[in-house]
Length: 180
Image (cartoon, rainbow, N blue to C red; front, top):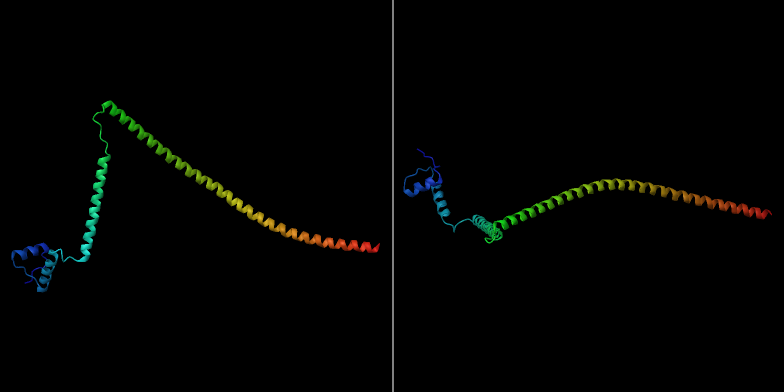
């Protein structure tokens, strides 16, 4: 008859320690479990990967707890402690001044936000306006460049025609002088 081997790690350990008989199908599995117990009970035989992980975890945990403690100390140090010498009227006046200052600061922050939004909108509208203007200017410049190149070509043709006409007039003038 074969009993189930899966009693659970804790149940098997208690049964083995109390001396009760536990039925196991294979003796090799019992040896491996006892070998695991021997290894897991001692920290010195811990695998290097686990030790590094635990060490890193402890360092991180210690750092986080230290940082939290520092934050608590800073809060405690900067906490507002009422002066026992102040009267209620003075304290209430100070609270009103503090509330007024907080309102002024919140108004200033709101004004800055609205100014930033207005500047963003103005920048967008200027960009749209100037981008259209820049596109039109580019088109005008390209048309002007084409017109200039055609004018230069026409000027060269006109200079050539003038040179030809001046040569012809010079010949006619020379012929008329010879005929006289």
